[in-house]
Length: 367
Image (cartoon, rainbow, N blue to C red):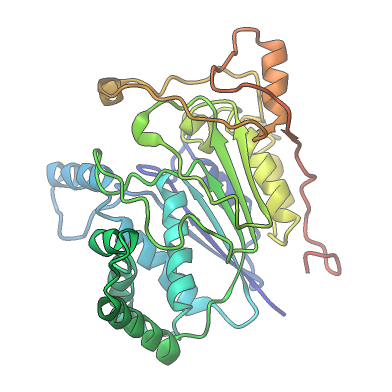
């Protein structure tokens, strides 16, 4: 019987807390953990420090450096890839989930799998080389040559041959990536002023069976421009717009109900495609049964993310093209809250509704 391999990567600065958890943390809590579904959670960039950093001031500086420079992206990517490498068996299905830069992280992990496949177990020593080859597969200079029709065939063929040799010698093939669930992908991982957003296979995700992307309507921070998925090459892609700013969609504000709206939508999409969920945990963490956690609430106040250092950058509303999928909660909010009038939302012609959350039972379609 095939198993599910579930990889969850959190956003910058996000980790498990008492009262300020992201949708990645809530989703991970709701997953069935069993021999048939192996689960991995990675805290976001800037949440951990190496063991050799031994004083508090150095730790804080190291975390800040990681958050603004993307220093730990490589480590997070390789840790997630290693989990897959050590646990994947033929016919297993891989599920990726990520928020913010964590969403970009899982897209990079998937891109490495697309390029090299999944290495045979125990090949940790090759992972550093994999990442370096992947990151530099088409560099800026080579891109310029391609665009100008001056492609250096020898330069390309040497790099391609190394990739092909590693894949043929050490890989088990590309594996089955069944689903990728993203919350507001942000690719500003180079530093605050530079975005390394064009790593291979992170835009065109047609090699992934199903992709779902929850996007914030009201985010205006220029450095939080979301990384779209290529809509022209994918047969099962939904990019759906929700009311709120970046963390209103992906969570991490003090426990509240606005971010739960996109979580309910994502759980309905993923569970219908084979993800196994624990109903008691979903009732508790998502629907607020028991009173400790907030249920979904589309009328909750939208936060203001355009403050602090971001006020030094000009605001930039996100472009929402005609015909984009808009979650039904946006229409409800606009109808009840007359003050909610996002300038970038021109019409509500294509409404997306939630699917019923499916729970695994022996013999059903999720088996």
